[in-house]
Image (tube, rainbow, N blue to C red):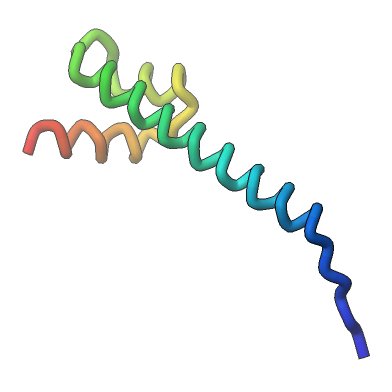
Length: 66
């Protein structure tokens, strides 16, 4: 029988990492939205500069138009 040990420290570290990644994604989306509103770059340039998938940038752009 396999029994896994629970580690409070590991659990907290995993939750902190997850929260950090969520914050990074939220900031990237905010930056992409701002660039789309400024209409200075192509969707491809925004995706490359902010490291977001091109489809996500296109989705954000569609949301701004409609």
